[in-house]
Image (cartoon, chains in turn orange, brown):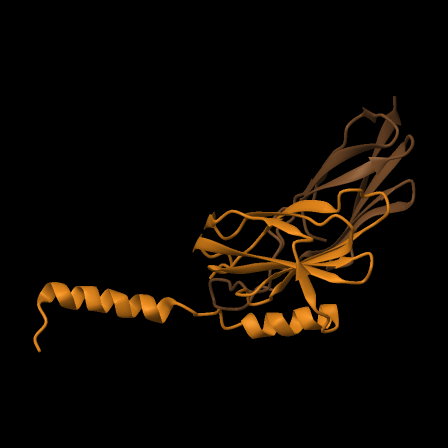
Length: 140
Length: 109
């Protein structure tokens, strides 16, 4: 069986795509462990927290991130592809009615940002967003 | 102490009692992550602000732990409920032990 040049290109790009699917950043498991330590291994629900991030960040040095988790007492952010995955932990006091906050974070490359909220009743809620980073923000 | 650290906060001058207001804070700080290397290849030591708190009349509004993944000049925007006239107190804690703080009064109309 002989391939024409054109078929070869199609086949090659298909293989590249297949290889690209399912690739998780190397530090993802570290992040999972850290999150498990935060929740104490409890089950996490979804929907109680919304995470608002850009889909594509041109500059990994300042990526705006915003979350809102009504009824949360504590919210932690992680970036699973960063050399140091924890990003920040917010503890809310009684005078904060909306339990939302916005900040700017550094991302080393394209990766997932994960927000886990500890609710007033002790349960946990999670939200995850993938951010494509054009230029990583860890310096060189 | 890191040089040129200047906190800036934006708080409305007045609000009605029970209102929810939005606070914005920014502090100029280089937030050296500890991951970067200088021209000779030596790692630059970590120097960041590791904690930020906001209180209103002694009551906690927000207490944040910061990691190296927070950008240069840490910026935070969050909400607070104003039950009475008083003062918001903002405090930043540096890795080197310095504490930067600023306060803003708010009146209730």
